Image (cartoon, rainbow over all chains, first blue to last red; front, top):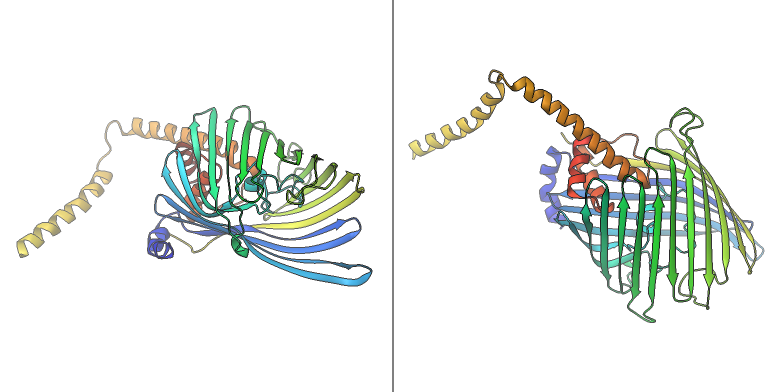
Length: 333
Length: 99
């Protein structure tokens, strides 16, 4: 694959398919129950188009966490992390099908594939139900078929089906599983709904299911997104609404750069299960955020969350500054 | 051998010159109509591309403030895979972002 990539480089340079590095870098602070963690993070993404049918893409996450030692001890502990979120080859096999091989983000629901990058997500914290269907690793190693099954000017039906092998390699950590997603998008209404399914094929062999509903009216700055997911011993949902105040002087105005966000989430537990990653007791969480879009692809995120649970209520404060970059690997012609 | 070489060179020369001459030849009487139609078609393409962009790319994230022209095709291919765009949508986006 590397040889093919190198052989195609002269052709890339003459066209508009020059490889690029995109992604985001930032500094996040999170205060949970009085303890503050500081997280400098960078998430570069490499994308290269090879010929007419092949795309190679990869994203890494490099972060450092500085968190209180706890137990009455002063000072902070440091925990460094370097991991690949995905490293995949996408072969556009036909107008309706793309075959993906390698390590890829597990296609369950919408958050993992679409909203998890730090330069996209409105909140620094993932939803409580994030681990359902993503098999707690969020990545799979194997193959996937995806594409648009049917599309016209008003409708798009897309599908995804995958199989993952077990991988215990720290950089390609995945569980043996299978699953998929089917979505219907009504373009004129800005409405998308879909169902997801996942089955863990190791240990307890559990099934996971979910639905999602997004409403983003055309020519409006309102976005409402929601997901519901069910695991054998817990289920839950999140609903998120955001509205960029661009009506007041446009997107580049002082007020138009502001984006208030609200998220409501709940999880319900029917039996203890340390594997599913959800809270150990029924939990309700309200998240409020104010994001500010500065010039030059910089965004400031601030949020307050109130977590209500029988195990104890908590306040979570988060702030972050995120810079998004997009850099061609060479100039091209 | 020399004759064959000359024949190949002449064919190559003709193959290069003919398209250039065709492009720089006097305007055809219908060329203004064609040009108008092409402009209309191009603005229709741009409108369609804008629609595809609004309906798909802007749904998850704000578009980058500037996109270097040399990566447009790679970026759109990436979007096609990520957002499960149809082949027609990919073409419309390419025409819109790289008219």
